[in-house]
Length: 236
Ligand SMILES: [Zn+2]
Image (cartoon, rainbow, N blue to C red; front, top):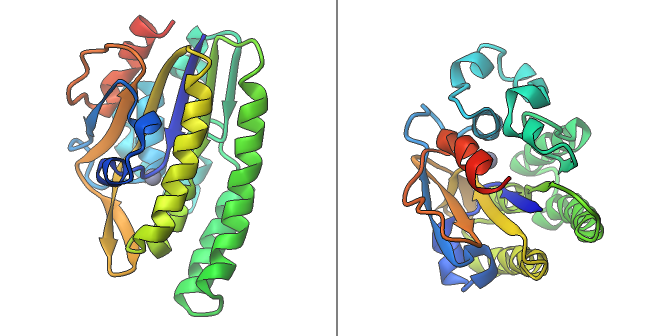
């Protein structure tokens, strides 16, 4: 049994600053995403799943269509795990409805139609729902449990410079990782890219993401596209 927790825009600097031991697990480091022209969420998660750089292919779809991109299990490492639960992962099983809501929330916030509290509310509500499902699914029998959480990214876009708030988000994710770690399955925690503060706001950081494993993996600074073969070798 294996677990992958995908956390969008989890930044290693904050994970360390906020002492998130469960997110950092026994082994951790940065991934290498320097092969990508920009740190785009759907491109990175899709490329992780497929084990190859899909940037060109996905960008050719255009900005709007990009989020509809969806891989078949046979194109990914998921096919190796017959009994799998995969929830919300961009490029495979993303909730389009929620994504559209987030885009419209961002637009409203940056045009000053809504306050930061009004921005956060539906994002946190969605996060709590997914977390609850994750905790229930942890109790099930599976080959692979792969959940994706995006609150650190979405909340980060409007509040990454607000350390007190980001600490709460990271602590919540850390608690969730701790509950998963207690199951003692092989676990990989992965983020697609880092985040950097721009005043109170936040922007995707280039060049690196974050990984951690519950087991010795010898990963050092892996390319995100090399993790597919790693998972097929070490986590099956
Ligand atoms: Zn992202």
